[in-house]
Amino acid sequence: MNIKLLKPLALILLIFSSLSFQGCVFIQAASINKQLQALIDQPKAMVIAQFGMPTGTYPDGKGGEVWVYQGTTGYTTPGSSYTTGNSYANGYGTANYNPYSTTYSGTAYGSGYSTTTYNPPTTGSYPTIRSFFINKQGIVYAASWHGV
Image: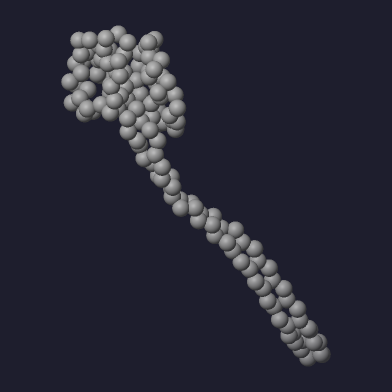
């Protein structure tokens, strides 16, 4: 998501085009936009104070620089389980009747099974990129990000 549209950044777009992006939560996106927007028109020392030294620097084609911060964000999906089962029962017997009583003898049996499948939690990560465009005077004139 670009905060400002920039024409001469084909090199930067080429670098970032191969990186995959997983969905982000709207609240996180708004927070990142706010954080980056606060650095527009600020000296580059403010970027260093907030993010440290960049992981890469590139010319912006206008005499300034593009500072890139690359990292990763990890995530864990919860585990899950489900159970399926089957059961059955049978019975048989004999009834004996006489004038004074009725007796019944018989056998009943049954069986069943169930299967539980457990899917453990999974962990992964995806790239995060923050880019700051700094003019000749050392002032941030634009910023962009990819990944939360």
